Image (cartoon, rainbow, N blue to C red; front, side):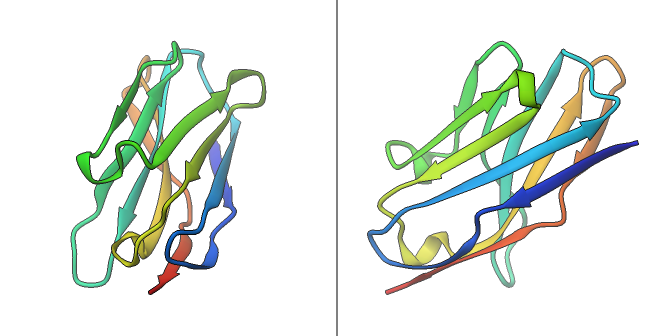
Length: 117
């Protein structure tokens, strides 16, 4: 059983910063990808950023230069530092874990990020 617990969402003014955390527990193999997706009202869920267990990263164009994803493999935790937040960043942010050896994916419960303009 794999569980993902997110924290760090909230309300912030435009231009501000937030840091999201997601801790994974359970049967987690070393070869995996952890990431953040978001879903705004009326829109599809989209990738924000992800990071492999080896440290390779990928970002959506809309967040490049503003968001930074990182991870602590010893703690099975992934972080998303969000700076220079914009109103259009408002969404529910979901943590995602892909276990490559198992071919399985898992989602967190989601955390709300609201940016006021």
